[in-house]
Image 1 (cartoon, rainbow, N blue to C red):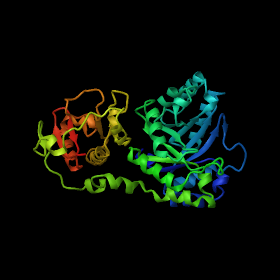
Image 2: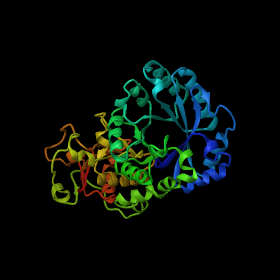
Image 3: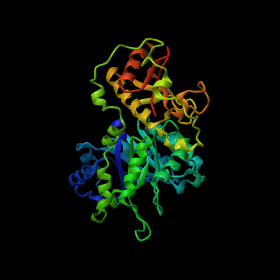
Image 4: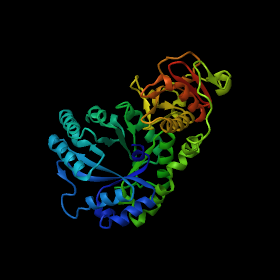
Length: 417
């Protein structure tokens, strides 16, 4: 799944306006713009989309796959006929062979909790193996009439529409959106959508700097990918500067800028002996290596804004608190865990890294624990296998963790500030 959620995606609303009459040329433009995913509208309510010809969906989807793009289908739902909408979704997902499907629910679902439940239940019955995304308004608190939890609970991906219309502060708006969305379903991957459109250019338009800042910020906050609405707008010659902003941001370069070392290098680097229970590397006190804790960070502290969320799909997060605390950590720790996750997958088939504890907001550790600053994590493998813990500890050292301890039933790692 990681190849489908990393990088930049973009929605396509009306293919005739976006170059759909020439699928080969369209997909080449998308690839030249460093787009990794496209979201093609396949349904509107209980109807197929587009309702009238020309219909370029089939040809564009086929060409995109041929040229290596990930293709997701998206669907605006109204709630008037929820069972018919779910059936239509299943029909089109099957027709186009889609592994990913997005339901977009907005004002038409105000006060329609029953319809939302009906839709989700039938959708899950129809598409038990399809990965689902939920797209809607950026601030749930502004739209309390929408049945948020019903829609979010079923989603593998949360896709808030972080459109900074009539403003120029994408970073601040994303941070608030993340805070409100993340509590809806802490297990889901956050995949935010930024603004690349204008309904009234005389009143407000996004600019290239804001789009670049949005991408840099969500990456720094732990997102593996992000999207923009909408291709139909940035594909116009008059908006070439906006398309250039999307093209210029390279996720791989951003990852390498924060990672201890590229995963490909780590996977082939020489490795030492496995750790024994109670052994720690280096053979010094944790505080002497990583530095002592300065304060316990709470959600109300300004330092909390400096922590990031790890949405790496190659890591399993225990999340017993249901608050995403186990996904929350410093950018340095996230980079080391991402590198370790790659080593784990290279070492063992069908095995992932598992994080059981990261940032501590519930006073579960000793008073001076680095967990309180998001600089420590407790680790196992998934599936759990205690016989592999010694090797996991060594891999953590290889991945660049500054201090690693074999605690018997798990591996504890910590990093410098």
